[in-house]
Image 1 (cartoon, rainbow, N blue to C red):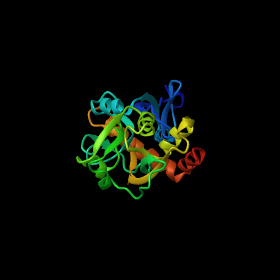
Image 2 (cartoon, rainbow, N blue to C red):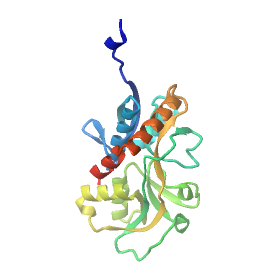
Image 3 (cartoon, one colour):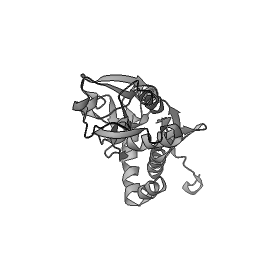
Image 4 (cartoon, helix red, strand yellow):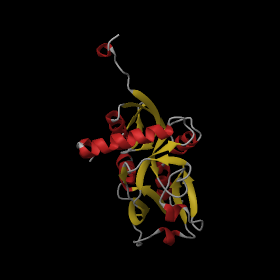
Length: 233
C-alpha cells in the first residue's frame, strides 16, 4: 500500500463544557454553543484534533475531569485552589470581569471582596470568583445552582449581593425581561483568565494540553481567534 492511498483520521478528545454560561458556553438543544466553544474547537482543529463536547453543569464538569473521566472542562477561572488539581494550558481562552451586583437602588459603589466580609453573598455552585474572594472565609455564601436562580434571590431580597461574570449576567438579564433595570454593579471581585482545566488523571490529559497550546497559538496568529471574537460581540 502506498502512502498516497492512506488517510489519517484526526485524533479526538472529549471535553466537558459548562451548560449554562452563555455567551461563553451553554447547552442549546443537545449541543454546546458559545464563544469559548468555538475557540476551543478551532484551536484543537488547528492542531489536528477533533473535539466532542459534553455539556454538563460546571461543578460536575470539574469533578469528572478531576477524576479522569473527561480529559478537560471549561471555562475554569484558574486560581490557587484549583492550581494543583489540574493541568493548565499556557494562555487563557479569554479574560472576564466578575461584578458584585446589588439592587438597582443601592447607593454603594467600589466594593471589593474585603467589603463583603460578614455579608451574605449569592454565588453559583462550583464557580470561581478570584482568589481574593474564594479564599476569604469571612464572607457568607448563599449557593444557587444557576446564575438566574441567584439573581431571583437578589430580586426577592433574599440576598443583598450576587456575584456574576459581566457578560454572563447581561445574557441572563436579556433572557429574563423581569430583570431589566433591577440590578446594578457595585463592585468587582476579579478579572481572571478563563481556561480549560485538563485532567491529571486522564491518560491523554498532558498530551492534549500541548496540542491545545499549539493550536491556540496558531489561531491567534492567523486571525481566526479575532474573527470568532468579532462574531460573538
